[in-house]
Image (cartoon, rainbow, N blue to C red; front, top):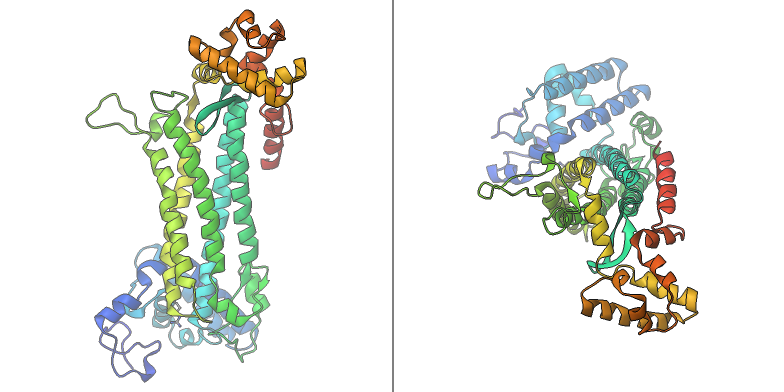
Length: 467
Ligand code: ARG
């Protein structure tokens, strides 16, 4: 028999019909052990569940199953201690572990692969891994939501400019702006939860593609691995990666949200805006300009969507047009997902840190809120409510007042009553009551609006929901 660790011999795991081993280049393109060793814990869990089931069904002896179970645990320690002899000649994590098992426990190790194929093995390993990443994303997002909630609570009634087109639109509250992100990240969280619920079916036991003639119990392995049920079609089980695509899609949307707040932080922390101060822990200095404090973490977060969306497009492209069932193309799924998941988890942690540490500059926010004719809409609304003007006409009158203030180089509340009356004779001194930014935000009491009472109600709702 050939030696699995001799690169010149035919592969012991499948080489029965081969007279010679693969070329070095074939080994290089074929081997996935360089990256799929990340699946070792899932692979061992899947194999342990499979062996226990085989014994329970009388397919292998309990003695062999015990030896397999113990051998796999020993291998787990070996890998975690960093002294497992990984080799590309054994292609992937599945064959590396199985060959090592036989090396350690002898004959019994060779029985593990009964009623199983690497096709259902990799499907279950990868699902377990992605499922775990969904849990991590959910936990990370919960932490991030808490950080935004704390910011919202501290400044529920602080006024700041609200923007459209990045032009001053209407005054809003800091709390309201922070809570906008709580809503976004809550939806991201529910997307990971939905994806997790859908992927929680066990493909193990689909074997190569058609199922098996051995009397296996797929419900038992599904239960042992924490799945809700076994998958219902063996061809589908070994050939789809939609669970990974759903994870990547959810990750992409989440990274897009992260990038938007990252961009706001870059703008807000600039000397021109000074809306927030980022802590030293999340910024870097310049080696030539001593005054600089650069928002590098925010900039990197703004960029991360590039690679996460890139991974998503890559996996879609790998899967597109693949005839059923398994094809080796699908080995290209893992590196993309690993990289996207790593980027996302790091991004969530960094954003949580930045949000927790940042300080809003309340006075600057307030001054900015009052500039740029931010209460023009309040003035137009007042003309409708107090003078009975149709909104379009009120809009026109207000536009004329804005133009007048602009000509005079002042803000709306700085115009005198006489100046206002020269545009519309009906205007009274009451109008000044709506031109202040505090009054403006207090008046926006519609459900979901920026009034501090509304914001506080949303904060309370989320605090309760997050527990
Ligand atoms: N390393 C392979 C992958 O990641 C495992 C499955 C291989 N199956 C096969 N029939 N060669 O997809």
